[in-house]
Image 1: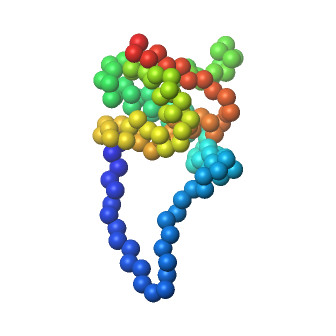
Image 2: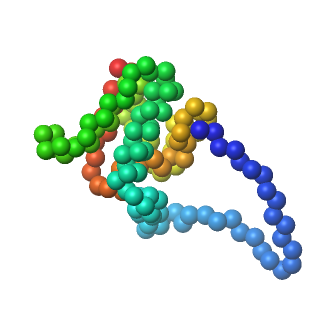
Image 3: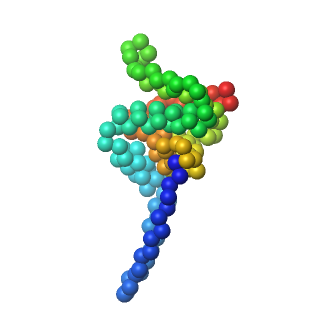
Length: 141
């Protein structure tokens, strides 16, 4: 999804100084930011994990014109309570999986006009529920 960036002007008068906000670059700050993003973005974490995962798979089908439904397997005792979403798009190489699923604000959809996401947060929604999950990619196949 392309995001429009509105232009705004801020006029500063008087004895004020300006400073750009940044994120402190140390391990503690990165850990706290990761915790806030992982635990504080979604109010209904199970719903977000399901919605974001299915939406990402559907986006890939739309982007690559896949004329086949996304497969969703709901957790049951027969499948060890695993929630599985399978798309049939091009897949990601190993290094892209790491950056897309573990680096906040990394998105493959920033310049796409037909997808839902673009902020680089949705693929991390599952991390609000669990510290361990599996991402499988059938890259180019």
